[in-house]
Length: 208
Ligand SMILES: O=C(O)c1ccccc1N[C@@H]1O[C@H](COP(=O)(O)O)[C@@H](O)[C@H]1O
Image (tube, rainbow, N blue to C red; front, top):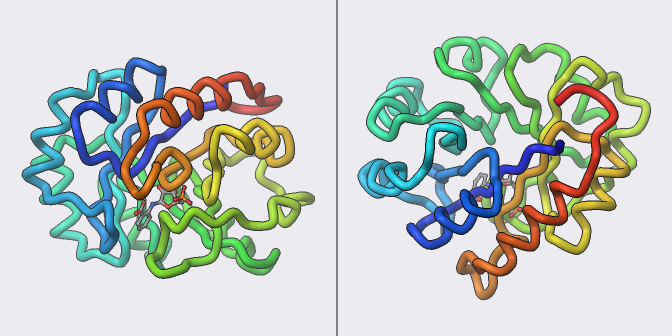
């Protein structure tokens, strides 16, 4: 079954809803964003997340020591690197890594092969912030790419109404959403439930 990550959670109700609806990952944003949380707030919220749901910290071009300190304090399971981090930096983290790639053209996927990480996240080109902008990219760019042995997380402008089509077209291991489960920039509990339900209907033909 397709994995789901709900990102940018900032309160207990949204976390409990995502967990109850069957999310696999919950993301806390520590990068510059309207969804940014402090490590203290994330550590408090992390108490509501059971061990089977993985806690992801989202960072953009952050210092290694800062990432490692926050990871320890919050008990993060994965580090999502959403900036210009190098393959060498990803290896230094010491925790499972989700590396994001901003996809505007086929060329943006050229250096995916030089990274060794746990998940490869494909997102739309950066907008006001490096992620979480609610814009989808041209999914056809992922066609004819040699992703067969990689775990792909698809992101960028997904919502309950387009996620099944996205899964059919890109065939990812998982999907990641932030803006698409919000109303007026606040997480919407009904949209969280609807997104997870729609995504979990999607079947993937390859690795999980
Ligand atoms: O969610 C954010 O605010 C954010 C900020 C900075 C970097 C990444 C961020 N989130 C990630 O962005 C993508 C796309 O989100 P959206 O659904 O289009 O809003 C997703 O991978 C989030 O994890």
